[in-house]
Image 1 (cartoon, rainbow, N blue to C red):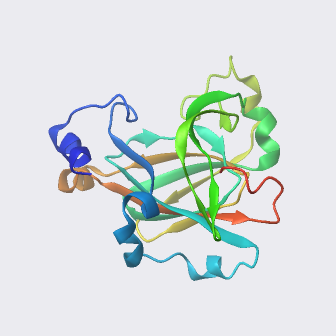
Image 2 (cartoon, rainbow, N blue to C red):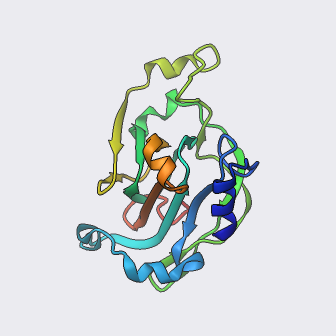
Length: 207
């Protein structure tokens, strides 16, 4: 964590980041920062869902201007924004034919069950849950069907939370105002809570 903040403050770029910006991406609190778990709590309504099992709580830190790929998870996802803003572009599962999914190499997350908590284990793997469309600057020559895709946009800020149902396609842009960036290097902070819906087909696969 100290190395990450030093990179931000120095203005250095990182090949491991996004747009050259260092990015702490989906850091599992129970593995990397377990002391923080005592300071946070998941939305109470999520704990009351009879078919949901808690999988992971993840921390996301960036200096803003980061964009995820268009992708799809099997898990139920609640993103709670702490600082900065995130803009979600969401597509229902049936829009997949317009989004040009293809198998790509990524850091894989192989789950193992510990009681009712699903714990991630990292490694390299082949993933089929990413769309090829650059949603900020779509190339309709390469991806003409994307012009017919029907999506939703939602922006969340500090104190907001967004529920993204499992199997919904989404891409997320994180940003900070100039004042936020000047005040703190980690000006975009979010926590997401993943749950496995045991009634969903394929839910026990990695999200």
